[in-house]
Image (cartoon, rainbow, N blue to C red; front, side, top):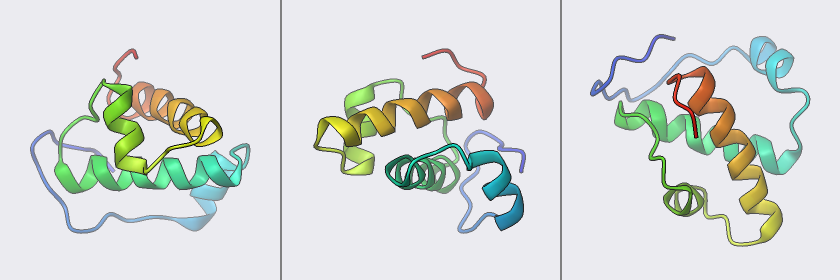
Length: 86
């Protein structure tokens, strides 16, 4: 799905086979962070904030393991979906 900046969406198509193929290397914590960040990206229609603390809050990450999961997924999304460098 191509994201047009500033275009909010109430849903996005998710293909389980494609998702599984592309994310099979993620841990369960990373899957949670990845989905929450994607939901935020698509529901706001805006790029994810570059401030990692805000991304932690978006995902409810409070432990070190949770924050590491958010960081790994945020970098992936920022590079793949928005072509930003973190």
